Image (cartoon, rainbow over all chains, first blue to last red; front, side):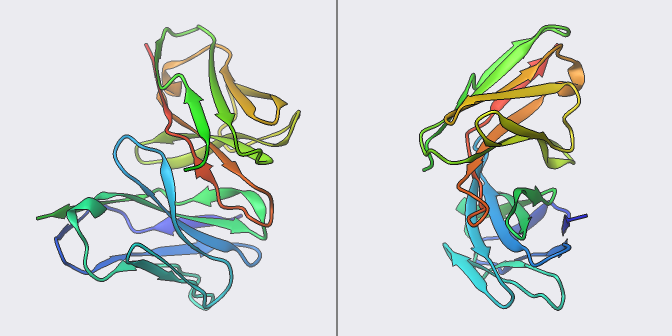
Length: 112
Length: 113
């Protein structure tokens, strides 16, 4: 079946550090891939997406590239801020078959 | 922000009582979902709907039922609440199969004592 595996957290970084959160997936077809962010006490918000191999999704300084050969969609940011502290979820949709399959989430804490 | 309203936002109930959570959308999206979020488990799908009166089970559907009599409303019912159903429940919506990204409500924190 379809699944998403994320690196376990929590991840703690100093402000302005480089961020990578690893995400790999298993899917039977050619999925669309997503990153969501959840701030404390809130619902999930779509951060970025990619719908085909080699696509790069980007938003708010975050980016992720759809790598079919390694079945990966790692989230990166060049310089994190305290306001980036949140839980990040990787997700996939296989051939448009809803609903989304989520990873377990990675908690990021950024300290000043 | 997508127009999704969950009610109530917080609820405490006793074991064995029925509970209904409501999700209301103003986007006219076809798909609606109920997830639960628990530490160490991430988000798990309970039930979803692909149209009025059309629903299907997710991976953790036991003990839950749903109904969708109108496009805009999706109800989740716990027939007889148990402590294992203490969780944060999220409703989500999506447009269709061509646009599968989901948009989430703010969540309902349910405590079963």
